[in-house]
Image (cartoon, rainbow, N blue to C red; front, side, top):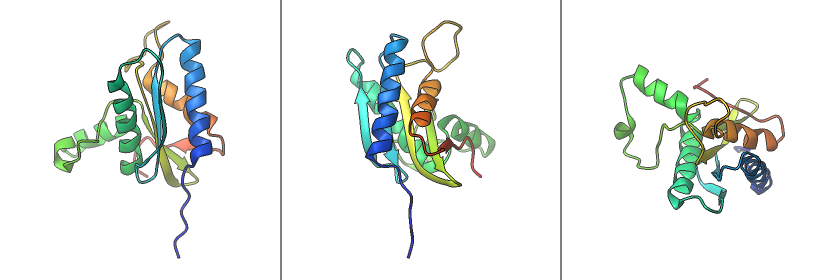
Length: 152
C-alpha cells in the first residue's frame, strides 16, 4: 500500500494569510495559490484591486512547480539545457515565470505554491518579487517544509 504526504487546507491557509499580510505591508496586492502534489488547487486568493489574470498566473505557477517537482525558474533553465520548451508538453497550464515553488517535505514534493502580481526582477526599495512572496508563504506553512530548485 502506498502512503502519500500532501499539503492540506491548514498549510494552504497559513501560506495565503502570510502572503496577504506581506502584500499589505508592502502595499502591493498579490494573488497566491497552493496546490497539492498532483497540481490540484487547495486554496487561492486574489487581493482586492488586482486584475483576475494574476490569479490565473498564481495557479499556473503552483501547478507547474508541483507537477514538475521543481521551482518554475529552475524548470526554465532545465528546458534550455535540454533544448525543450513548454510546447513539447502539450499542457497550457505550464509556465516558467518566476514565483512558483515546489513544496518539499523530507525528500518528497508534497505540493506547490505560486504568487503573481509582484515583480520578476529584484529592485532596491521596489515592490516585492513573486518568488520572495512565495517564500513567505512557504515559511508560514511550517513543518520544516522547503522548496526544490531543480530535480534531485
